[in-house]
Image (cartoon, rainbow, N blue to C red; front, side, top):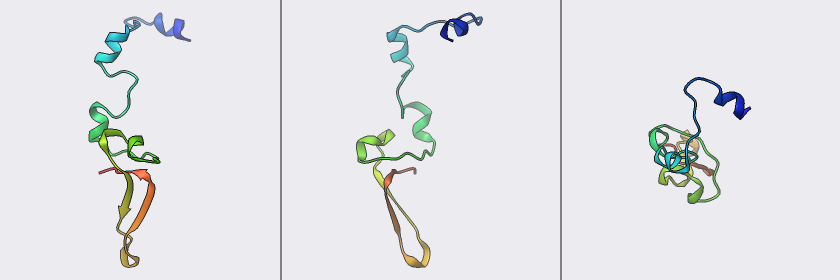
Length: 74
């Protein structure tokens, strides 16, 4: 598959340093931090963009509802 992709005009392999420059292979950098995302978590380190694990939402008359295994998405 990779060999087929490389035959497309303008496609080239990136070196490790080029990948690092564009944050290739990482999650939560660039535009991702400005976009709402729904991600499962077990603690704060699982959440991108320094968000916290756990979300409290307005439950209406029943009061707030806490979801412990979802990253903040504000």
